[in-house]
Length: 367
Ligand SMILES: [Zn+2]
Image (spheres, rainbow, N blue to C red):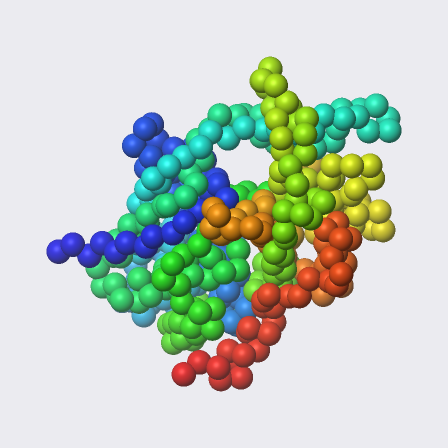
């Protein structure tokens, strides 16, 4: 029996997958699965379900002695049930096919700071991405083939489809979402309320392991999203002259600011990006807590900034999405900074607030 199901999506910014196999454009799905599990965990936690940290010692595991589905679920969190863990396989097979890829390159406006050091973004980009130069990254149409395991096919597919709809609206797909990659659009998507209801129903009725979530874990409870629509007349959205392609002697190019610029520093004197602006009134530790760090004990970023992108090629405006999992005070600070950076008249409105979405579900918003 062929029980394969297809989901078609469109990558609006490149998908970071950790490479493409040869020429057939079949993608390594590890980074994609990792991002799916990450979002599923954040949603389940906000719906009062428990999901373990799969990298900790205290993650779920089956011994193999469990005889029934009921016994297994008592030992598994919903994320481990769907995505697998020690002694339990992932409930679906995923194949991802990209119809087009583009080589990844780094470019940066070349100028020096006050201390005559090489411009910060350029230095930083080299540190983080040098090894990835000329990797091929998928952009445009991407096809997911999902094959659920036998038994519970409907449930598995329902959860995976809901999850992908959620990610299209709230976040991104694949790795390095904090640096602008993985924005995508799903044509046949469910509303965010329907998505959360589908996951809520499954988690509540599932008979899964119950434990306390760690307060520091990512949860949709403190999620927020700003979405800016920026005309090309905006002084920060224009193409800047004189960018150098890193690792190449090619002539300078014109350059549209990307996620890194908006996070760190934009072209022009003293035009601080979000992180640097935050750092001016906060300690190094506080800044690392919000924006992450690669030094010492690694910390993931709690703020994510897309590249500038268009939903349709012939569209006039660019979009920018900035989202986070932070306290309200941090969200408000970053909203004010976006207003400053892009010269907006008012602070951008919040497109989605996790707390509000969850309140709606808890107050009986599901049919
Ligand atoms: Zn688990």
